Image 1 (cartoon, rainbow, N blue to C red):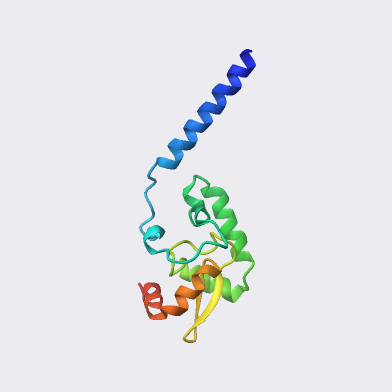
Image 2: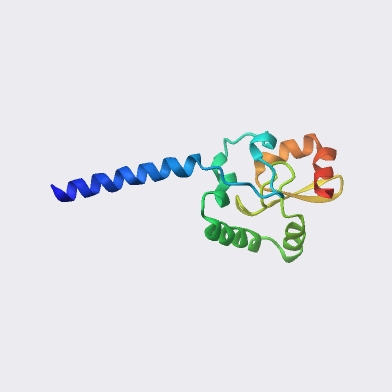
Length: 134
């Protein structure tokens, strides 16, 4: 009986913690715009939560994932992607959703966070290239 009560209490605390974590407003980095305002692409190939892996309190594992994602690139591409740092479409850190994807835009290599960003990048290349120059 006491064990059941303890288990129920732990489950209740876990649920309460989950709700508190979901409603907390963690300030975003000034270099990472709010993707809810800029994210216009289709998320059928991934979950929107993937964009915010580093905001969920998993900074250590998110950083390790980014390092692993960049390791999949050639040395030249890795250097370019590290210099670019963010996806011009979503404003998310490159590598936060796997290996950054290289797209040729008017002869310039541009890295995006996921395949879902490619359509928007190619539809409005000048807009997104301008974001990278800032």
